[in-house]
Length: 175
Image 1: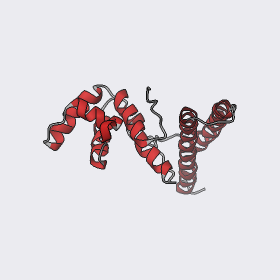
Image 2: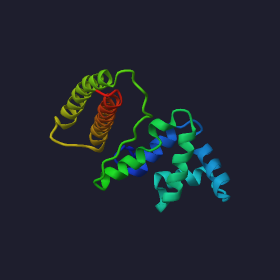
Image 3: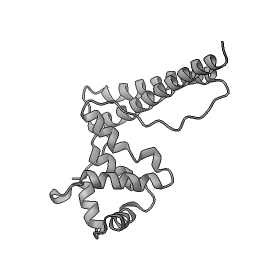
Image 4: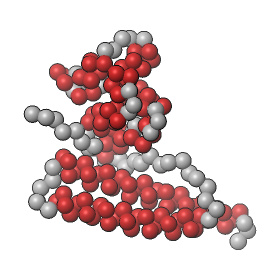
């Protein structure tokens, strides 16, 4: 039976992210060996990532894997997906925000975010309606819905950042 990895399980999310990263498990094993000074074969690491034969990753290894992915091109997009999954599992809401760009007009930026959020809400509705149409929710369905929810939360937090900066800009201008 083939295991289907999802974004709702922290271990699965980490494995998916490592697979996306240039160099994959082999390069991560070499990185961990260099950092920890203890040799780790790529296949041993793969078993830990996949929780095969009772093996699993320690929190230290999760953190090292995250550090390694963040150093890689594009890694900032998915390196912390496992942490988001862990937070949700324990009732904590968290999002990773991209660096805050400066907008010449924060009000226009906020207005644009509201429009983008409307679009994202439509995408979430489409995914959720499809996922729930059979009266059941699979891990794949849950994973798809979670991904869309994260997009909305990130956009909402970015909107919040824009409106707070808009008020600050107004205060600094003496209005």
